[in-house]
Length: 347
Image 1: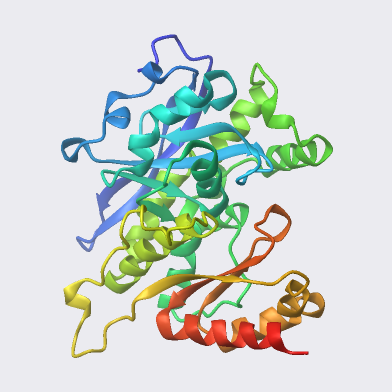
Image 2: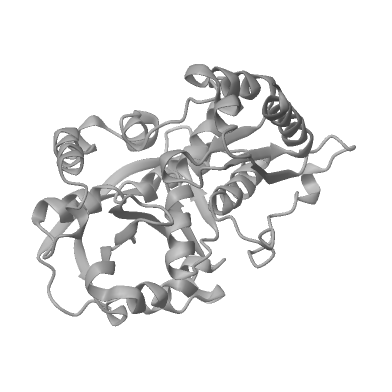
């Protein structure tokens, strides 16, 4: 574990159970001042993280920072939020040896990684370090499930941003405990001006604060969301998180070396009316045909999304540029595949 005295501290909102006047349990928001450790060697990390076990299961906040983070970009910092500390794992100083020391934890079923939109982080870890990110709770997915569960339907491309989630008092507590958005905007401006921002060393105070801010609320948000999700939504959260992790990690063996997807729980299979199995399908698009798939100003792919209860993603600028990724219930995925193939063949 980190032995040197930390130079930085932050406030970590923590859930605490209390009892209301009616006798009901509720989650309140409390804050704990915790150290921020900059990690350059694996021995500075907690043993229970480096050596996952069923006897010491953990829930941690997780995020990555880098340059053009994807299979081709550069992973620079990996942030881990525990209840008593935030660890900034410095991939630039610690190198491949340090990140690979985290592989057992990142692949473990005994450590839950709470993250907002895991797709590109997972892609970078897989292609750069051979790490198959596993057992995530993706707060972007959880937010959409809660909205649907409570009767609010979202548009096909309406994904909650992390800043948007932090601004929602249902998940982040009181206004006075929220992030300084001005500081986050300053970092965004710096990233636009200099994409190499996260590569510079030593880490500046602004870099440390920005990195810690991206994980220090995740444990509190996690507990708030888990209180709201019903049994079926919890299964969707698990299986869609696993599919998100695989999404851009295209390989030649159809993900056979990845952990198996969470099965549908028996208690949800009631009279044959349980949820349908969910899958990921990767559709190859011939050269010069992606424009047909997307359509003018995205009209074609949006129309297909409206027609199918499935999530459809393209690699975009970060790639892969010749593939479409479809996630959702089997029948809806097959329907989307047929519509997309029709557009590809349409002369």
